[in-house]
Length: 434
Image (cartoon, rainbow, N blue to C red; front, side):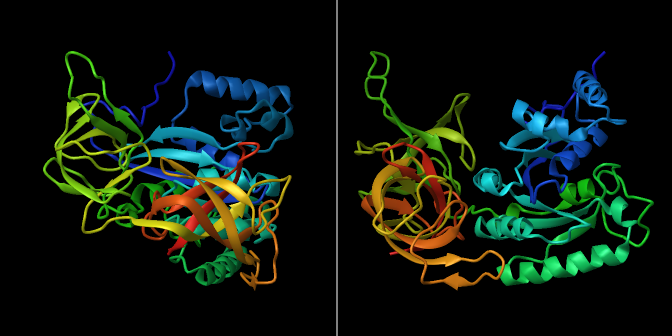
């Protein structure tokens, strides 16, 4: 009989309530990210027997003496053939203490844009470093991107400790080097854990091979790390995705606004303001697929009904009056350029997708390009090429309803789309509203 797996998104009524944690892997190619997650799933008994048997059979056919754990997360055929991660692989598992959504992101430079996607919603980022190679440029690039994305917690995982003789001095040197770089980024002091993903040392259980390390295993750390205080539960933001008007005989006057709560908490009876019009109203009810609810909070998908007949459309935003979002046609944003065919240049015209609103925009200025190694600013730069990062000023045709990214990760983020190809060419974090 196949062993069961606890579905983290459908806990039974008998299960104790557990908090959801999203975490992503980051780092250079071949640092062992996929192997680490495969080991974590395997040792925490979060895999089905048929999954294990399939990977063991494939590993044996390739002449491996043990199961290639990276195959548990490398899902694309091209990934399995090349032994690399290309797309972001999402996996779900749970322990009695916590539920997890994990994102295995690629390490290759050309797939940095996929790494940004995986880390954009993470509460914790695991920065993997090969103990033999120390910190390399891509390790620094990913750590820098995690700081830009305001991932609340970073964890330095020094992998392949078995290949450096379980050396404590090697680990401490890498930890000190990474801590100095993290201090430049202005992020909290990262946790540091020496591991061997291949052999399972310090992944789920403490390792006997490194008696000089007295900290927790990786799973113990992930189960105990506190991230709730980093979430914005003050500024209520509800981008309207769809206006529901059945206009049926049974509901002739029904008008509801469907979408997902971006931040804060909303309740029936709350006074709200609708942007960009500035009209105010009161929430008469909040409904879900299971019926009315007394309150709504992230990331609930709900339908909100307002008292009175207001003109509210897709792309509008419902906020609380004392902390509204900014209504602006000009923003500064730190962007990671993702287009490998054409660079970003001042004067370029694009479509900006922000929450549920899409607007036409022009890049009015490239303020500087960042060097991810030195963190220096190249103010003479005239363009951004693939995977380069810089500060730009955007001017939009119609207003954005936004916040600065450090205050709100949902309403402070945007993507830039090429108008001719409809391809996503950049991801941006709003640093200033005007």
